[in-house]
Image 1 (cartoon, rainbow, N blue to C red):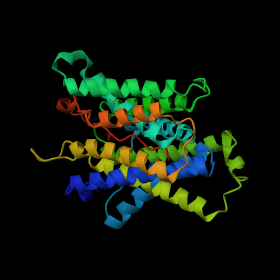
Image 2 (spheres, helix red, strand yellow; image 1 turned 60 degrees about the horizontal axis):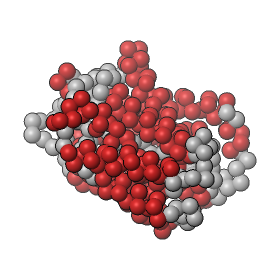
Image 3 (spheres, one colour; image 1 turned 180 degrees about the vertical axis):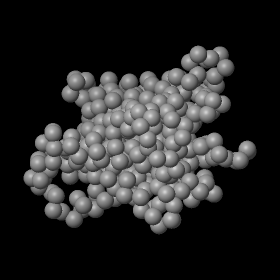
Length: 328
C-alpha cells in the first residue's frame, strides 16, 4: 500500500494540506454549527470509516491491509499508541466544538514545537537559532491565546481539552519511536482505528451518549449526514497520506521520503483552514485583534520549525506519522 504515494511526495503533500483543511472545517460544522456534541459517537463514526476505508483500499488493490499481524507482544507495545490516538481525537473534538478554527490550528502547532524542544534540549548549543526562536514564538503565542480568553476559567475552558489533545498528540509521536519496529505507519494507523472502534462503542453506551444522540434534532437532515461522511473521508485520507509519507527505513539512499514536504504542507493546511473558516463560520465577538495577532505569528512561526527527526533510526526504531489527528 505504501507504494501508492511514494512516487509524488510533493503532490500528495499538497493534497494532504487540502484534505486537512477540509477535515477541520467539516468537523467544525458538525460539532459547532449543528451542535452535535457527542464525541464518542462522532469519533466512533470516524474510526469506523477509517478502518473500512483502509480495508477497502487493500481489497481493491489485492494486497493485505497490514504487513504484520498484531500479536500479543505487538499489542502490548502499541497499546499506548492506541490510547493516545483515541485521546487525541476525543479531546480535539471537545475543544473544536467551542474554539474557533484559527485558534485551534494555532494551538496544534504547539505539538511540533514541544517535540523539537524535547529532541534538541540537551544540545541547544548545536540547535538552529531560528528554529528555537520559532518554537518560543509558538509557545508564547499559544499561552497568549489562552490568557486572552479572560471570561473563562481554565477548568471550564475548551483550552483544557486543547491541552489534552496537544499532549496526547505529542506523546503519541514520541512513543512511536520506541514502539515495536515491525509495524509500519499504515499498520499502526489501521490497528489504531480498529482499537478505537472497540473503545468508543462501549464508551458511548457507558456515557449514555448513544441514547442521547437518538434524540438529536438534526439527525434527519441531509446536510448532517453529508457533513459526517465528508468529515470521515477527509480525516482518514489525510491520515493515510501522512502515514504513507512517513519514512519506513526501506527507502533507497538519497530518496526523498516526503517528510520534508509534509512539514511545509502541514502548516499550509493549517493556514488554509484558518483562512477559510473566517468566511465559512461566524466568528465570536471575543475574537479580538490581539487574538488574531497571536494566531498570525503562531502560524508563520510554524513554517520555521523543522520536521521532527528520528534520533533512534540507527537502532532500528521507526517513527509514527508526524500528523496530528484531526478532531473528527
